[in-house]
Length: 131
Ligand code: CMP
Image 1 (spheres, rainbow, N blue to C red):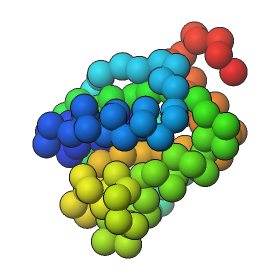
Image 2: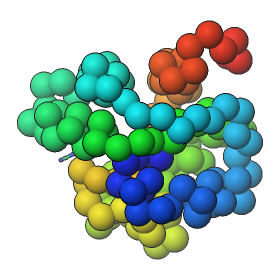
Image 3: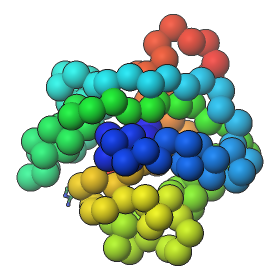
Image 4: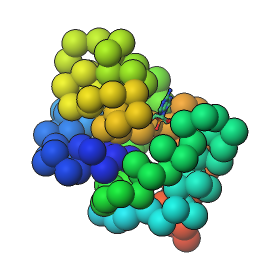
């Protein structure tokens, strides 16, 4: 997902360019906005964290871009491309280093495992039989 901060700041094009230049194929993509229920469901694993309310507020405040990407070793390669969760810790040239402002508003989300990629892909693109 390209998150609301990056969409607001006009970075959709630049981020997609980095993703495709890194060899990812865009299998599905949509511009949409999450409801509070959607965001709560997507981030249910963080429900007990102190930042959960802030995360839901942020993720619902404007449009996002959701995409399913394909590549060999996609999960690890995408996490390397986007950089550390906290942009202050992200490597030079990573998407979060370039386009994110804080740990809470960190421009982009990537799945942390193939299993979660399947769950998160189905969340955004229910009905697609691509897995
Ligand atoms: P993401 O990779 O989408 O997964 C969970 C999100 O929670 C994370 O990116 C951040 O946007 C957010 N998050 C993680 N830690 C914190 C924190 N300490 N304070 C605020 N938001 C956080």
